[in-house]
Length: 133
Image (tube, rainbow, N blue to C red; front, side, top):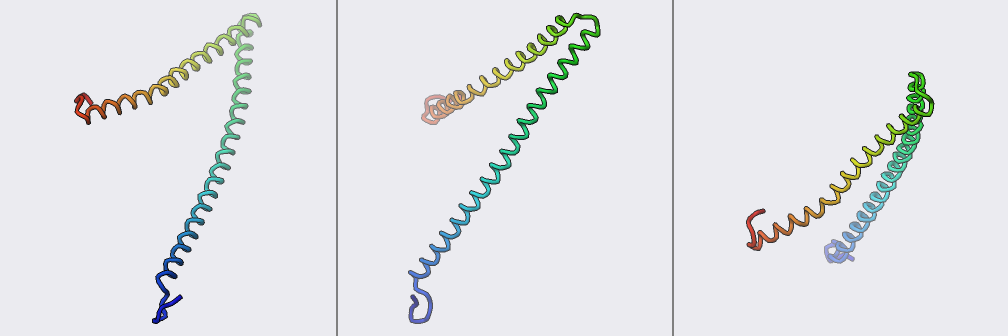
């Protein structure tokens, strides 16, 4: 629709503007979906490479453990004692890494509690309860 001067009416302009806005929003949503698919594909391939690297790492560590056993045998230890020494060393290293990881995870678990405690203290200070913020 147009008024006497041949210009589009306000209703037409608003309708056109809404149509353009909807088209822009649809385009943005389509772009976001495409970016998410691309990101997911890249993350999936990265995780697959990490899994392959982990498997190869285990094979490499197994080979190194076997080599260490052979070296100890060559140094005069019996086969059983050499395997036991290497096995205990690997288990000891695994235990150290496990306990380090557990401690770090426990520290992370305490962080939300500290945040909540700090928020309570801040709220109390704002209310005039304390000044030790």
